[in-house]
Image (cartoon, rainbow, N blue to C red; front, side, top):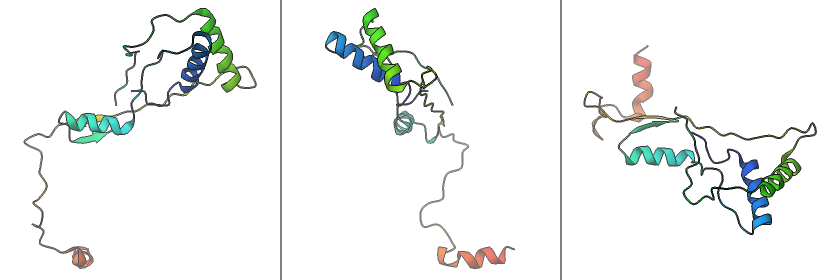
Length: 133
């Protein structure tokens, strides 16, 4: 899944060009997610252990304009090249990709011991570890 800084060069260039040419702008690039949002979402739907694996992307903005005028696109190209272009004429494109997995607890999964059920104090842990050698 793509994260927040993905294609920021393109996003900024399109916004500046469209704002200049048309007096406002519409999102032409999907909104992206932040890593903490993934964890919160998975926990809300019942997943307990969250690790950053799946990737997919399309433009899911409902309020986007379905057209992009040629002159706006040409202005965005000039802005992109001017702001982010390299000496050799190439332009960078940033991609920030998140990988994640999550799973729900299973009845066969071990549960943690109850709080206060330990029979060794942390202050004596060095003694316990030295006797197991």
